[in-house]
Length: 477
Image (cartoon, rainbow, N blue to C red):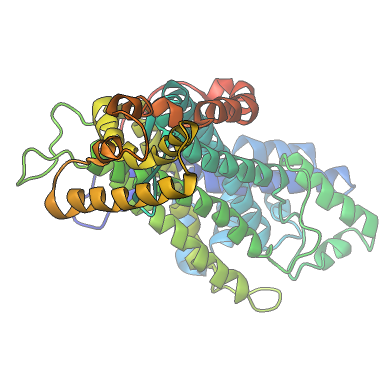
């Protein structure tokens, strides 16, 4: 590893080997060659004078890329595609005359970008499934454990630890649906020619329009896609890039929401992310257990979310049938967005495998706040004993304000229950009042909602993708 130049941390620290490989030169240029082979096969099948011997020669060298020849040629020509046409031709002298026949650079460049993005989306989908499996296990395990709900980060009606996790899970479920939709519907550019009119192919086939249309369909099918874009300029509309990055941004949003919640819960000492035996939280404060995994995921998620603005700019500023100010930009933004999402999904899988729940702290927080939440039940119990609801409501309001002042202004314990028991208007003893404070009585259908959601929406996906579930994630640093 070179130490004297910048290294991309997405490669060295965050993304997986699988995702880095998808965006590698080997995949890119072997896909270019696969596209040239598919084009030659389809042209031969439609009657052009291309031999099986030429196609066999192309196939023999599809994955044996002579990089040195291509790089040397590119220094001379300043054209990457023609340099690789030249290098491929050196290896395949018999097929050299028919490589790239009728095509333009966008034929290999744009179709490869789509193929690579689809492949990367398939890896992202696999990791979403694995994460959903982990979160489902956690949500079901803790579906009935009461905890404080928070609105505006103020204590609110109780929920459960598992129900809260189901909210994270549902976000990833929606991300999965969008990812799946794109994988199924993403079109290739196909065989469109220099300005998208297919004029060069019309010339090749002596004006036979039906053969040109069939050529487009055959190449797309050979490459494992269902369809090509119906119309294009020289390139496919960069709106497709925005659509792909919007899916990645959605995953980033879900990751940020989940990890932000975990960071807040870790501050409350209710739930913590994994913390290894030799892990150091702070160089100065040895006692600290910082949520570094969640912070890292949130940090990378923000990067991903901002990539959509970049792709929106690119999509909106293309000139007519083609301009090249998108090329350098896309080489950076698209791979790095995928690599960042790959990294944050691995981090979230790692976190979800080892979340630590501190039941006693959660219970303590509930008991500090539940007297306020129990007031409606207390009110109803007092009404049953003959009390006037309107009068009782006002008495509870006054007592609640006074008890809150004691807690916030004087640092004393919440004495609301004692105040109510001492107020003869309610006709309740302290034991009567405390009997109304069972936390599980205040969680509504949290457990049922969690179970029903996972069984109806998540389990069908997990069963369908069972082969993708398994194995743990070890963070690189």
